[in-house]
Length: 388
Image (tube, rainbow, N blue to C red):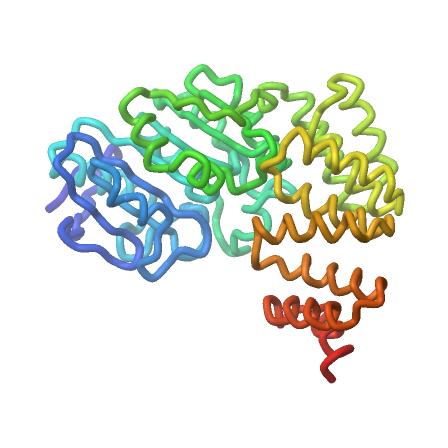
């Protein structure tokens, strides 16, 4: 079958909608809606984000991956040869199934794609933790897009602004590039933007664990809004603070601790209990060996955002560096109860037990750390201390 595109070129639609390939899978239901899920990075050879949730949803589902981490800038292997062909095939599948609405959904690279294709299709969008400007410093696209990839849609803002799409977007406030990214479009009339307290890049995973992603998606599809998510905040609507937080983190990454501290002070003057700023300040204090102050700051973050596990780990580590060994042991074991495969926790426990003269415990923890992360030279060196 052939479909005429807007530029009057024929596109040969070879997709058999009863089958699936390495980059697409169609799940048909009795529904008038087609939900198109765009996968994030490193999904190929028939692997997709959301595939476990798809069977629980009462809608037609089209799962798509990009295969080569090209942020959907060109073809989708085995599905389409261009962005325009991807759009036409989605429209064709929707028409063939008798659907009257297309909704695009995605996380990370898939969130970018959901927003891009949603804007080009003028449809509803649910997107999590995505870059709105590709290859921006510290962004995932800057780290992951192959250098040879030709960037066609670098900035999503003008595309979204000129579209009839309606986007609901969420990003974690503790992922500072994601927070800045979302703030860039938070003022657009067709965007509902939410930042989530105490969460990094894994907003989708966090919401799935807390609330069940199929429940959230179904509620969104039926009501065009989100149910109550207690951790939702509005920091992404403050463009100045979002940019300040990003710049302070960028300075920290570049080991420009003086600039980082100066920017943090500015942010805390505007908002004294600003969690991301306090967290970055604690990271800076760890690097400057101000361990007691770091303990106080990490403890504050753990108290105000108890679901933020990264702060729990850093609190335990700062306690170890402050030689508060018993408290550090307690917090490392609490972290392990949440993150059982944390090699870093076992490594730190080995160091603590050695300092306390509990060599058998130190040996056991060294073995655990190495078994969980055998590629780490640091963990191997500690393992060899006891087993070589």
